Length: 254
Image 1 (cartoon, rainbow, N blue to C red):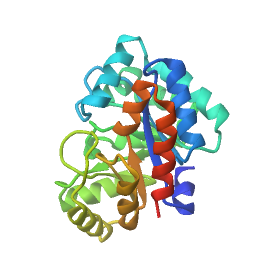
Image 2: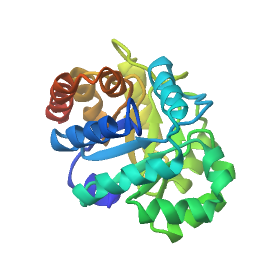
Image 3: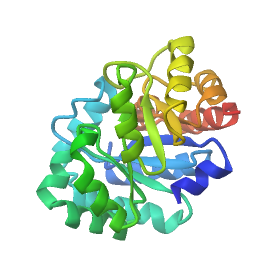
């Protein structure tokens, strides 16, 4: 399902935090995203130690965990979303600990049963993810791995082998968060270099927060990923501006 989206267009991939600031409002956030231009949805699984995330998403993790949003509750949320938007791919973005606690087989089985089409695990090194990839693929779930500006040639080749439908390229070193600008020339050069080593689609995230960012990225990448800017509005329950943001991002992708 994810692959087909990339074959049709350069998708807008939107991240939201499940269960934040409440279960109902997180479902409303997902609905607004999918109704106003998001092609693929990344579902944040709340976790107590989100090491890859910046202040905005960390705060969302913290509140959702405090409110008792467990992986089982997230699966209830994803099932609700999938039932309403059956053709829209959902990607679970979770740290490895919840998968480990459930067991890879059990987690992937439940994920598939509740509408999950892909899986991103930011703290799982690709060299250690072969077992999870095998289990995920058996349940028809795509495993998506990450690359960063610091990734060397060997890591690029490993990630290319591990990623099923696309590679998530982290635009900057460090944690998630909105940025006024990104290192465009360096970013384009890095993507060009990666393309020489893989035929996988490449989507760019981290720091992307406005239409003008999406426009530039779509000139040299295959997809655009937006997270913190969405979660900020989600937390404020500012759904009108969330609609405007998603429409602007969608319309800016060339």
